[in-house]
Amino acid sequence: MYIGMPLSNDTWRINVFSNNLVFARRESGSYVTKLTMDTSGALIVASIADASAPNSSLYYSTDQARLVYKDSGGTVNNLY
Image (cartoon, rainbow, N blue to C red; front, side):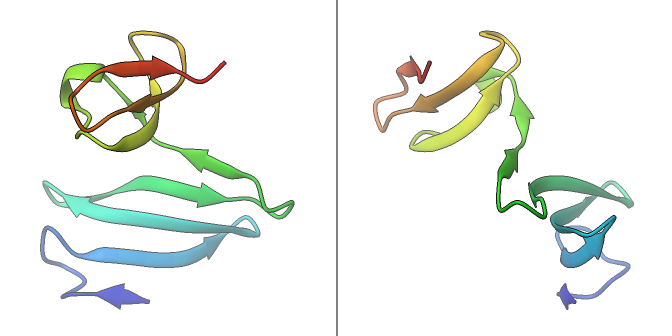
């Protein structure tokens, strides 16, 4: 399923790949996976550098090498 035009940047695609539910966004001509839910229901979140992550977001920090929450003030908080 596409939200937007399939060949246009900024379009979202939701599909099943290898039995996983995958949310991807088209960027510079290619779809980039942003979130995956596997068959057990586990969420696999995007890997992002702290400086690139928006405030109030949950992601895997490539700087901290762990799951983090970046609060509304921009402070990165390790979750484990």
